[in-house]
Length: 80
Image 1: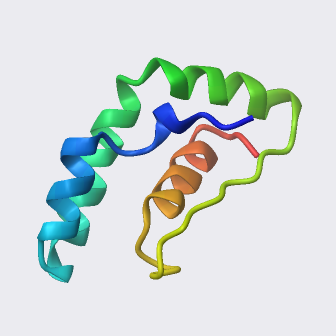
Image 2: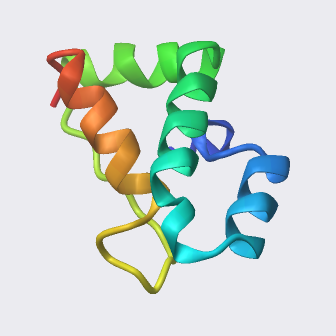
Image 3: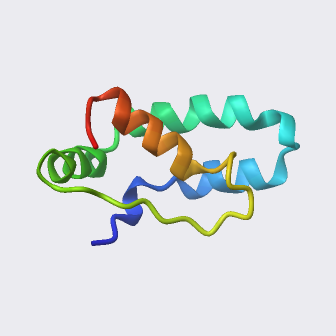
């Protein structure tokens, strides 16, 4: 299942790609704020309660990408 709705908004993604690398923390804060109000995240949380989920991404940076933030977010909610 692909829930593309849990990815950063187009506006946030474009801002991040246009920004300098030192904007990572601000991107993280903005994306976490989006996650808190995203109904698709609730669906993902329900799936994660019963199943193992795998997060895929196509970013070249393996440490600073939205999948890492999403993983941390889900783990903070005690989900797999």
